[in-house]
Structures are given as structure tokens and as C-alpha cells.
Image 1 (cartoon, rainbow, N blue to C red):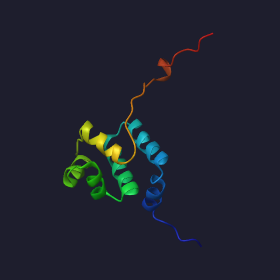
Image 2 (cartoon, rainbow, N blue to C red):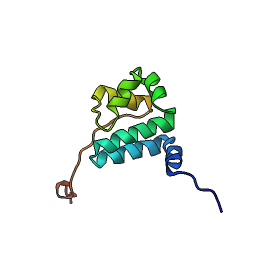
Image 3 (cartoon, rainbow, N blue to C red):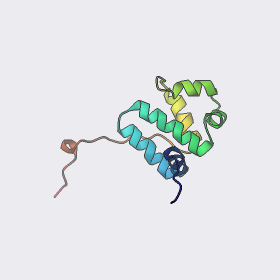
Image 4 (cartoon, helix red, strand yellow):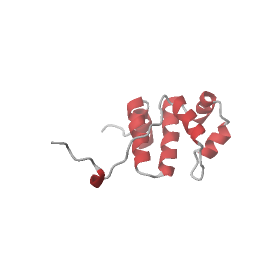
Length: 108
């Protein structure tokens, strides 16, 4: 029988891929759960950089401040999020959110 790997280790392996990391973060944002997004950012930082210390070095932000900002009760600024995303090789973007009723009709 093949030995199993803990889920977190498997997840971190997948998040090393920038496309997988971007999709993971995008889904966390789309869910509208800021706590899930901050956890996702911490997971991506761990996978891609090795953790918060490396993230701190790359962003030039204080490690403790990063921990606070990305903690459950944290409230990171747009500047902090931009620096974190850039350090991870990613960026934030804006798209139009449409419900099914708002989707434009196809032209004849």
C-alpha cells in the first residue's frame, strides 16, 4: 500500500505552480470570504517562497505586520496586498461581475 501524504503538503506542492496559485486565490476571492483569501495568501506564500519570513524580505514589510495583516482578524491595505501579490509573482485585477440576469444578450 502506498503511503499517503498529508493534504497540506499536497496542497503546497500544487501551489508552487503560478497558474494553480492564481486560480486558488481567484476562487478564494470569488467566494467573498476575506478570511479564506488571507489564508490562501499565507498558503501561497508558504508554497512559493517558503513562508512569511521570505515574504517579508521580498516585500520589505515587517514580518510581524504581515502576520497581523494576513491573520484571521487582520485587515491588509491595498498597498500591502499589492506588495504581497507582486512578491508571489501575481497581481490583482478587476473584472465585471455579472449575474445571469445581467448578461448581455447575443446580437442577431
